[in-house]
Image 1: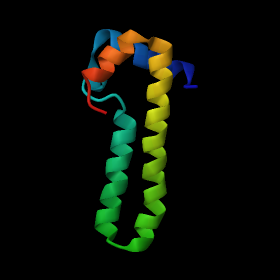
Image 2: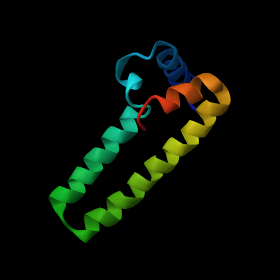
Image 3: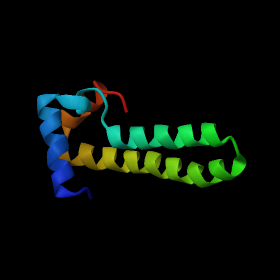
Length: 87
């Protein structure tokens, strides 16, 4: 389950379609993944990719888990929101 505050924040943004959540469903995860990918590009070595790869995979997995939970919790309203936003 998500933290109650986060769940309320998502519900508020689904209803209002405001802020960054109006465009992206998981801005924190997207930002962290982009930063980690950037670190891999800057470092350009296998060791960094080995360290960062599992973290990126974890965040992608976590996003899927949250999507399922929010779909179950918020229902059709969230499905409509999900269809109108990116990641």
